[in-house]
Image 1 (cartoon, one colour):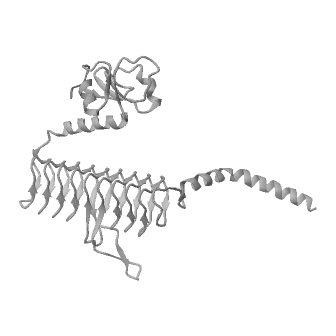
Image 2 (image 1 turned 180 degrees about the horizontal axis):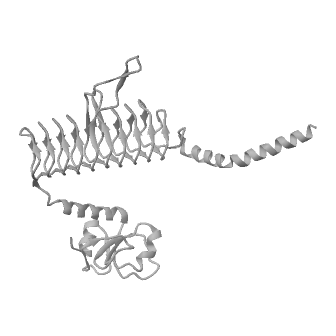
Amino acid sequence: MQLTALQVGILLKGTVEGNPEVTVNQLAKIEDAKQGSLSFLANSKYEQFLYGSGASIIIVNNDFVPAQPVSATLIRVKDSYSAFSVLLEKYDELLKSTLTGIEEPNFIHPSAELGKDVYIAAFAYIGPNVKIGDGSKIYPNSYLADNVIIGKNVTLYAGVKVYFNCVIGDNCIIHSGAIIGSDGFGFANSGEGKYKKVSQIGNVIIEENVEIGSNTTIDRATMGSTIVRKGVKLDNLIQIAHNVEIGANTVIAAQTGISGSTKIGENCIIGGQVGMVGHINIANGSNIGAKSAVNNSIKEENMSWNGFPLMSYRDSLKSQVIIKRLPDLEKRIEDLEKILKDRSK
């Protein structure tokens, strides 16, 4: 990839400040950038690297005022971090655009339907009646079971497993080791101290523009569907149980566990290692802090929550202050008890 500052400015709808003809052929962090690199400054704590950076082009915010002369050509945009992410996306697309065709060895069932310009890597398994949309890429050791439907421009990285009857929408990215549609954790107590497996006959539906991190598992529904709505972003190592529904554009960080039949609203932000019990509802716009335990439904929209037991974010901060003071309060109580005891003599 080789671009001039003028071309980058047009792509990002930014203003070029410096030499518009200077060229770049790689992207780099501002502290590591060398001549021919394009970098960005979004966080003020990295400004110190700007003045000694070897980068040829640096993307900055419109309101940035340099404290020293800058040798690089600057491109001013509304949000430098978002602008740089656009370049990363374009660069990523360029790297992957050459991947098409079918590698050997693999297994593709005769009844499977493959769209145009798909990529099927070696050692992939494509089962009966699978449908794969145009431009999708299936990397090595991926497994698509019977009747799976994959939309257009989907990427399944190495080792992704998609069980039977599951549906993945357009423009989804699923990273290595993720498992879509394994059995939900359903067992019935026989009354004799033994558990009988409850068959899980539903599926998983993942709508468009979803990204799922490595080793995340999404269980199929007992009946009906486990549903991940459009635009959801899931981190690595997340467990989503049977019949869960996650609303559009919700973001969930690593090691979170969501129990069966819980419904999460749209535009929620859920921190790492959050635990949710089953059969509860989480209101739209909920922001839940890391390591929180959610034992009951959240009904108020667009509120922040934290802690165990779960409480409003403001109340959790107050509780933390009180907890830090407990040793001092204990000592004061002991001193008061001693004074009262001495006075009673």
